Image (cartoon, rainbow, N blue to C red; front, side, top):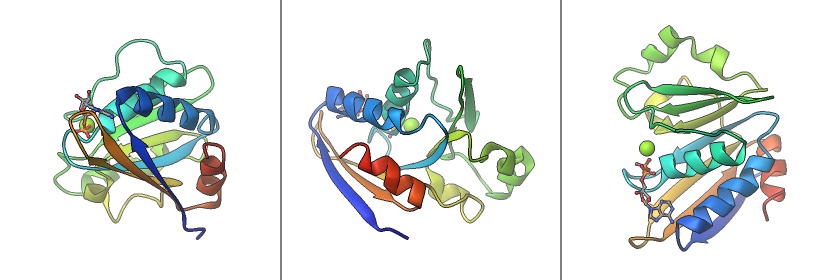
Amino acid sequence: MSGLTLQINLSDEIATKTLASKLAQSCRHGAVIYLHGDLGAGKTTFSRYLLQALGHQGNVKSPTYTLVETYQLDTLAVFHFDLYRLHDPEELEFMGIRDYFAPEHLCVVEWPERGQPLLPVPDLDLQLKITSASARQLQINALTARGAAMLELIV
Ligand code: ADP
Ligand code: MG
């Protein structure tokens, strides 16, 4: 549905932080966000700024080896996935993937393509591209009504 798309030039890491902070405001009641992009594109960096903007203090580890890191914030449970090392999407079944993706949770997923076809449609689909040492091109697609509403809050 919807087909709402936004292209943003993140000229430096501060711009990424600012965008993540804006997006955080629309995530407080839960959302599913996919992050696509090559290694080093900034998926974990974006997730870190998002978590910080949501009030998380302390470390945000890359979930590369654990597949998922959990953050219980005051009023929001956040699950940060990195599926780069997922060998078989069926591992997600063993993890009890459906319980993570409750509508009131915030799920941020790096390398979601490795989890298909078992992951739900995301509210927002983000694609990060490296354009220079410090700049990233970000495309955001809203794929649900909730995602479209989230996107409207940041334009
Ligand atoms: P990924 O999770 O996509 O593999 P990381 O977030 O771990 O990537 O690494 C991105 C790297 O790029 C970090 O070292 C970060 O400091 C750097 N970087 C440079 N410019 C930007 C930017 N505009 N936005 C995000 N990260 C940036
Ligand atoms: Mg990463």
